[in-house]
Image (tube, rainbow, N blue to C red; front, side, top):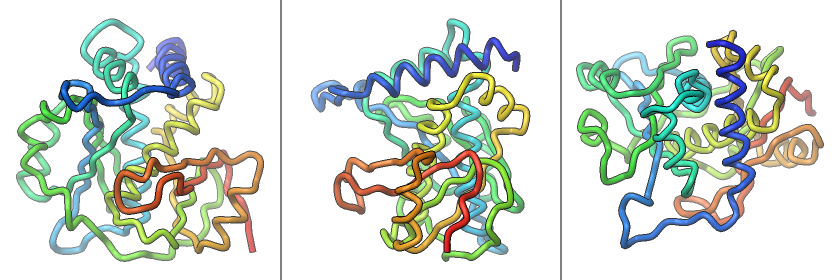
Length: 247
């Protein structure tokens, strides 16, 4: 990726997220219901850590949104423009074995963090999901909470564990968080981040710790529309350029 291509993709992301007011879906027109499909690799034996899966999701989402091809006319740019023009939906599914390999036939990008892997597809209308992805299960995708050490450096997304979100819901929220965070950064910072594979750490923290993080001025917060699992306007995540040390 060139720095100029990253800047062009970043400009599209920033402009689209700034202009979110009034965007909606029309049930009579299925093409207006757009979503990014996210697939997480959950093998039956030796499943990955939940925090690593969420981090892999964050990196994969950014690889799609800031892909260099988005700077040029073509399918990638058109896909994102359609999605940005409506509600920013994300749908998380799980795969293993041959089904996981088939997911990589779909336009998109994968990311791996330790033993965890995720794949983010370029968005489509929910009525036009690629068959390799459409067959994958949405519900029942979960992993137990884990307690990794606090990250020492780099971009980190904190998730409010007290909301009790499923893995799929938390993954979608982390995807929102990295998009909103990237949109508020400079093109130069995002290009430098791309050189590190859009590495991100994710930590789920208690409600009391999360409340203190939301009050930190440098954080980028995510408020959920409340369409699934949690109440509308709930703050689900907060992202920072560096870890924040809280009691």
